[in-house]
Each structure stands twice: as C-alpha cells, then as structure tokens.
Image (cartoon, rainbow, N blue to C red; front, side, top):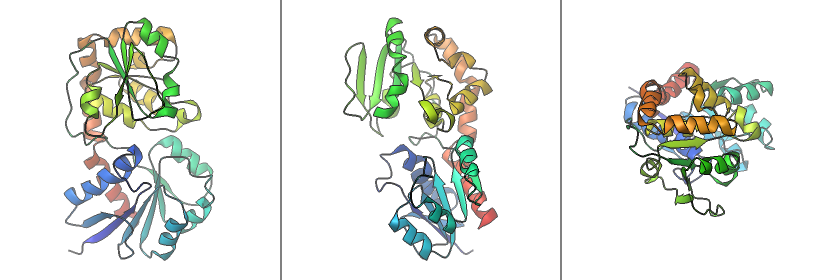
Length: 303
C-alpha cells in the first residue's frame, strides 16, 4: 500500500511548551504515526514532497511561500483570532479546507464568507493523558492554571475563595504574577503539571470577555480527566459541557454560586458523582486517538 506523507507547519518551533501547538499538532502528529502508520507517515516541518500539508495557525511570508509552492492537499487549522492578519485572505486563496476547535470559532469564520469550508475538530486531551484518575483525597484546596492575561478572568473569585478558607494555587509560568498566603504559586511544567494539579480537590477556570464565546474547553477536560472537578464561568464551551452532565451548580458567575459550588465539591463523594459520567465521555470522545481518527477521516473525504 502506498504510504501518504503528511507534513505540519507549527505556529511555534517549540511544539510542547505551548498548549495550542501540543494539542493541535504535537499529539496528533504522534498519534498518526502510532495508529495510522499503515497509511500515513507524519512529520513536523515543511516537506514539499509530502501529500498533505497542515498549517497550524501560522500566517507569515514564509508559510505563504510554502503554501504557494505546495501541490498537494492543504489544511489550515486555527484556534485563535487570525482574520485580522494581513495575509489571512491570501492564505484562504490557497488552502483547500479549514479546521478549528470550537463551534463558536467556526460560526465566526463562516461569517467571513471566505468560500472555504470550516470543520470543527475539537481539542484533544492535553498532557499526554490516556487514563482517568480518581479524585484526590484532599480538601479546601483549589487550583487555577494558565498564563498572565487569563488570570484576570478569575480575579473576582479570589477574595471569595479566600473567604471560604480555601488555599488557592496558581499553576503558571508567568513571572509577573505575584502572590502572598493563602495564595500560593507553582511553576508550571509539562512533566509536573498533572501531579501539581492533583494537590487540589477543585480547579477554577474562566474565560474573559469576547473569548467566552469561542475558546475551547481543553483545560476543563484535562482537569476532569485528572480527577479534579472544575468550577467554571458561563464561557460557552465550559457551560455546555457542564450542563450536558447536569453539573449546572459548577457554573459560577457570582459570589453566592461560587461558594455553593466550593462547598459541594469539597465533599469527596460529591466529587465522585461529578466525575462518574463526564470522565468516560471525555476519554472516549476527546482522546488524541479519537480526534486523530476524525482528522484522518476528514483528509480521506476531501483530499
């Protein structure tokens, strides 16, 4: 059987330090070589001799040169606002199909009337998670993880978390976040994150402003797979997942609902009930293997 070659152009040359490139490129690339090696060989880096080119949200002169010279099937994948980029329209003239991570992003892309079809391929589980973990046997500890701009989205929660006698752990690599007890800061690391997160029994996550309608739930599904239930704001992707499993109480937008959710999820039996159905859904529907198969089917349908 003829083996088709897939080459990826990453947004960042460091393909493991940034969540979007890990989730949208690093894990799928490895998964293709693990589960689909009978049909495909996948590599990171532009290869003009490959059959399929997948560009991970990068739009610059070099990438346009790649696209213009490439004669095979071209996929453009994005999970950030890219339509204001000066080269966006030109990129759309050359690619064959567009993929994105959420329905909100697809809806926005479709409104731009580029003439290109946009297909949603959800974010897969981050951190190489392949097995579900039980909820940690700890209490009164809550974590948040992310970068500096995102921490602003939970600032309103912080005094109320402290008021409920919870210890708040900010897991981040941002140097400009300064804390003092009862808030602690843990240096984010790809290899240490799962263990660091599991020092808490709850995780607080939020999206800010216009991002609330389009950002994915990749942090939420990673936390839940690690056995740590999430308290979230009414960000579309967070809210939809919580409501699908009747976890409406975990959606908090005011001090009263926040304290109620913290109280409920401080009980280990309630955490087990939270995780009972949603964990298998995440593993069975949002694993790297499952979503890579979705990408392969898309390629085979259109290429």
